[in-house]
Length: 453
Ligand code: TYD
Ligand code: MG
Image (cartoon, rainbow, N blue to C red; front, side, top):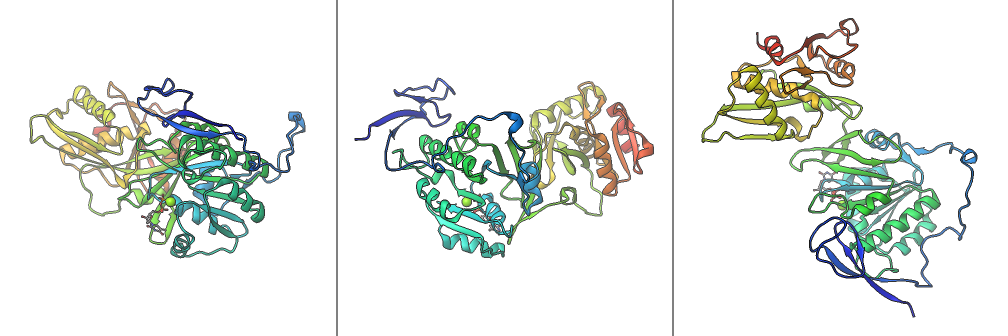
């Protein structure tokens, strides 16, 4: 007779206790404990194990670097975010809000890599629905196998048969293991299934993609425990009203986490956006006041983006400040700097700020473009179309240097800009190396002179 045991799990952080508690001692949340049944020691059903071999320790010197450690996918954005391709035997958690396009992107990966045998396990949609989606993407592939199943043990049985080179689970919250009695989606099930998939990935050397939902609070796949277990955590984000989707890596054992992939959602699937600057800058011919262009970096990639500001006299007593895609505290700070250090009277003005394209930027190099857009709207004088800006602004109104200035300058030059305003404190920047005219400023006052004089 198998022993049935139950435990209480915090649904937020996965903390386990034998008794119910009102407050989680680990994450300090209230009312998050739920009782879950755990049935241990079922003799018949075994978790995945390849013919029971056990690993032996070996000297670091003797471990050989595999010849092809990565599968290079037919998707440059995904390859870059993963750090150069899909590592054999890695477990990747792929999260995002519902409807953002997770299933679409992964199905697209599964069908657009000829010769790569993929087992796509869906616990959410029927095979008909998946077929419809692949028709929409417009690619079919005989090496892509669809399985609608939610039991992990059955999935492993099928995987043994199919011998895929990539396993996809859509989604981890729908899986259950018969070794545990609590319902699918509960902490103990999600954790157990992930642990078994991790073992499968490591022992069979097959990379596994786990699609995960984002919780109300915006954290990935609910419990933080999952993020510790997997090798890579990717997040798919974007504004549902915009067509652009950003792919970020939050954790990556095989690459850097500051890479960014950009896709455009079309009627026929997701399109890779190779040159983001072109889509993020509107190409209207008339120059408008309140618009400036910032040369920013997302990860290792320079990107030119458009900053739009609107300054108007406050209609009510308290002026409003609102920003989309840019930190509003930082905006308030920049407004205070303009007021105090440069004498612009913005205290009684409403200020609205928007980063075009629905993206969020936290690169400090955008500061100067924000200042320029606000001043341009305030004075109602447009900034010349072919000027880009790239510098941080300090509390005393000084224009501060930014990292990788040369890459930003080259990007602006490549996109046909005539001038770029940077800090005069950037080291090693020489006009001789660039065709674009460099305007090097030390304070906001100098920038204002350069822009509006
Ligand atoms: P989906 O991949 O199902 O999202 P998720 O798995 O993250 O929940 O895609 C959701 C949306 O994408 C859906 O509202 C329809 C839209 N879509 C397109 O615009 N073009 C397409 O080619 C496809 C397949 C979906
Ligand atoms: Mg989906």
